[in-house]
Length: 194
Image (cartoon, rainbow, N blue to C red):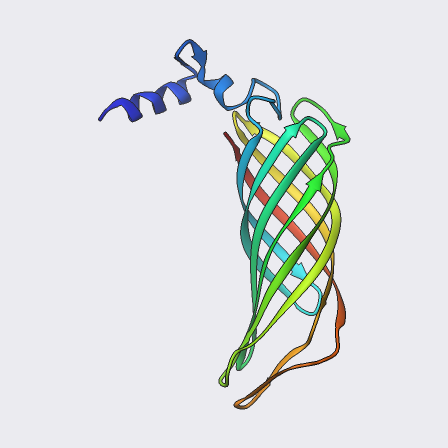
């Protein structure tokens, strides 16, 4: 029963487990990437700007099997009060990133990917929904701040294709015309590498 606490103490003290340094199990000293530890998870806060400006939150799973290539799977959520309605955007997607400018503890990488947005306009009447698609591109930077812990900053441009959703009183509608909506997003994340 005390074994998990003992292992935790070893991690924070930099001890050894099975002859391997616990610091090495997370990420090598002073290195932002290790082939032995290619998986990380992150929690993120964001600001979405396009049709409306709103804060949001989300999370991601990142797999970086090679020093110069990785893939990030993400889910984000934003909401705006459009009294008496609420507009929810629930985005899931991925992007590949390619670290170019790098040092031992940080890198800067261009990103390229796509996502879908499950949009819901909730009001006094029936909810109105739409599914939108967006290719996206941007740049991200990551700094290692402690063993296995890093901070990531990203800027991304999205080109959403979808239909307008509207409610009026107890009536809801979705336009039949496909619209293009440019959207920018700034993201700040904290990552943990396994």
